[in-house]
Image (cartoon, rainbow, N blue to C red):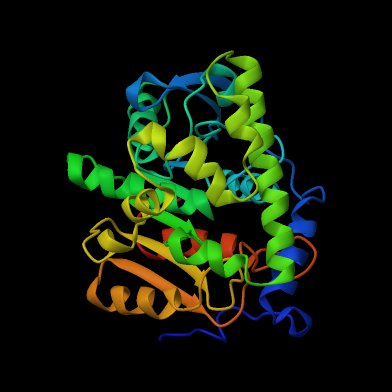
Length: 334
């Protein structure tokens, strides 16, 4: 398995997956050192005409556009990592188009449509890219995301390849690649179960908000049965998508089966000590990367889940993504 222990210089005290994950999450809640761009908010349309709330900012003489979203819960209003990433991209001359994906943030208020872990969100990326042209956000388009959002971005690249309109590149940080194995793994430790319960409460809150904004869209009794992330998918998501169970749904939405055939240039950053994901996935991802010379995969020894924090407001993954865009020739010269 290719490891790059020297490329990411992890602080010694954070060389443990949970330690880095928690420290980075706490650090991302602090005010960033650079002011965020001034965004213009607008409802755009995703696949199936689903309304999605977006925020965009365009610098002077933009060199391209980053289209990106976040992970399993939250909204554009509380995602510190996404805001830092967008600010860094903007400072480097990229326009940014951020969006609340299905059943999140203001998109939740606009539509009762639930998530699909990429099966439809991949097409949402493509739909937003199509509207970006009309709004003056220039090509090349780069799809990006982290955690579950990283899975969505990979689906966006895959669907673009299938439809003949791929993005110029895809950037995926600590993507969820196999929920069937990773969710039981997360529940196998006391801290993992505690983290899952926090996520589960957020998912139930999202579902309750959908039911409140869109009466009769969700059954409160089904929401009341949810005690795990897998329950949420079993009772609320999988049946609506036509799957018999969450396991069938996870297998269908996993990006692992198509990564070897994804010919969109890009960079996937993945930590071998990510405590959210089953440890067997990292070597499998490394094997896939060896069969795909177009998609670059960096598996680091340390980094945690959406971590890579180096102290103060220093985020290695954000810098690495921007460096890759410059070095790969994806962006025109500044």
